[in-house]
Structures are given as C-alpha cells and as structure tokens.
Length: 79
Image (cartoon, rainbow, N blue to C red; front, side, top):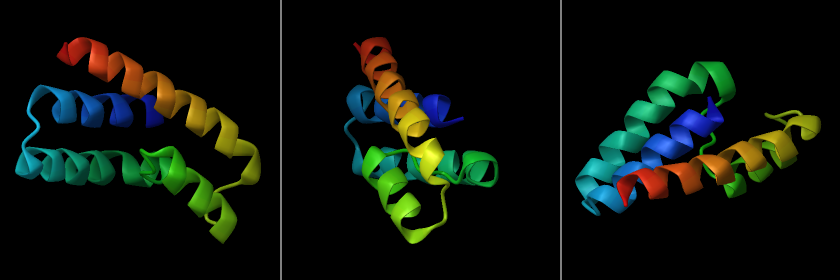
C-alpha cells in the first residue's frame, strides 16, 4: 500500500503542482491506505512513526524502499 499511495501522491504533485489537488490526493491516500498500512507515504513519517512506536521497527526499511520506488514511478508516469 505504501508503494501505491506514494506513487499516487507523487504523480499528483508532479502532474498538477496545485496545492489543493495535492492536499486532496494526500487526504484520499491516507483515508484509503491509513487502515491498511498506517498512511505514512513519506520516509520521514515512517521513521517518526517507528520512533513513536506506532510502526514496528522491522518494517521501516521495507516502507522506505516502497515509498522511494513509488515516488520514482509516480514521477515517471507524470512525465
């Protein structure tokens, strides 16, 4: 879910650049993916959630890798 949410968010960022569209995309991604994976579509948020204890420390690296790959694919699709 982290890959898809980050891909969707980065696609909207690079395709539109509109702050309202970006905010709506982030809200939709968190609403859809929040119950499944926590809705951390940013590596900094995933690390902060692990520090807080809301995310298992063993899941931080897979989350960050999925988020980076999702951002790359989203940017490529927007191009």
